[in-house]
Length: 300
Image (cartoon, rainbow, N blue to C red; front, side, top):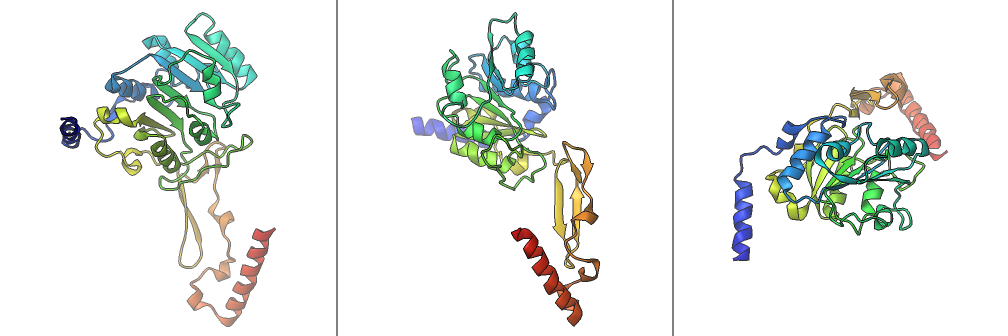
């Protein structure tokens, strides 16, 4: 009977006509930046089970572009809010001084046993399967989520680097001094390894739901290529048959607002930008010199 029940559930999901990206229809900002508040509410409503606990790190002042304040202020949620910067932490404390259900923590969430989220939350009374974990630490988000073992939130909202193409599995080294981030493809693979499925994608936040609850969202196709609809921040680099390098797409350093100049990216001298089959003897010799010079530059 149990097998028949699971088969019936799979058939019900497969025959649904709800579009895979239906959660994007619920985008809404109360305090969030690109619709996260509405998507979070829609997912939690569809999941049904709630304990009304959430976690956010880095939480900033608890208001600015927050993914949890709407739940705290308007849905009666209790929260553990974690901020590493001491000045922002003061603001965070001031924001929630009068709310006994919000616990502010001044700490940097790392990825080692002594500073990971498991250790920080162990000192609190939050349930092991709390509703929402929001991760936004501008770099090591991937490693911080990977290190969480003891807690299994129902929904994880995690920032990815939106300049990284969808199918590029880039992950920065686990180093607190770096701010490179991770591509969404890498987060999808990490999510699967931890028992989570991709549910929705906003411009730089991805939402993952625990496997045992995912079917309740009625998403038949959750491929990242399907769910990621905003590609506006990606800059594409490619080259022609003649070795000319082209830049298309966003063409800017997103956080620094500096244009990427195609002319300054060229590796070949202009006379050598032609198909190698058309090189003269002199051009072939010059190309050999160019290769050695570029190789020496890489070695140094």
